[in-house]
Length: 273
Image 1 (cartoon, helix red, strand yellow):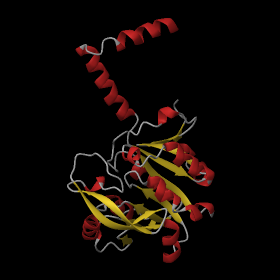
Image 2 (cartoon, rainbow, N blue to C red):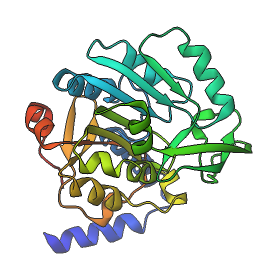
Image 3 (cartoon, one colour):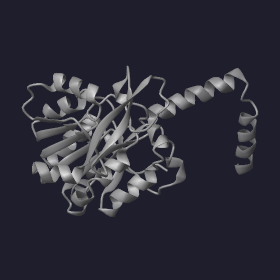
Image 4 (spheres, one colour):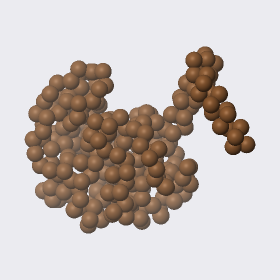
């Protein structure tokens, strides 16, 4: 049987120019992207609202939306009764103005015209004109013209101390490749177990920032978090880490504290290897 599979693999690879074989390959790629919930950024269908509601039901309190863009996620948070306050951070000055317009008058909202990172400093950002969700600290090849702008970043620890936020129930990070730097800025809060759940991305921008999923997972597990891939109605544990997981294919991940992992065990699926 093993020998037959080797022969079949060789046959398939040797027929790459065959139209039927190529069509099958394209269809399989599309199927697997959908199956793995890759490149799905719709917060209402990709599991983001689902996991936010699940976490906040167990741990009501404050949400940090780091990389708030125009405010779609922050506004979704504000609709949920167990979310007491939303702190939204947007590093790009032009996009922050749009965030202000969209969130004006929302009582739960605290808007911040800066980003979060591993140090307090001034930085240069690549503001993607025509696609603000592609703005990054890194020069990303996304097909849009970029303007180089000055911006400011602070550490999450400093922000929590100066604003009196003792605990973050849900830390959502969407910062186009700078997720690991943002996490490191909360190291004191992580050490003191004052963050309950984290959502982060690992995708194409992580190539430019030279960030591996392994680095983020190791950082979070140091503080007793368990990491999961996010699906529309479930979580799947990041188990038996292997290099194949470094595919940079635009996935959302969730990291949960031990108590929350136990509380949400009914939505956790066995790892698929």
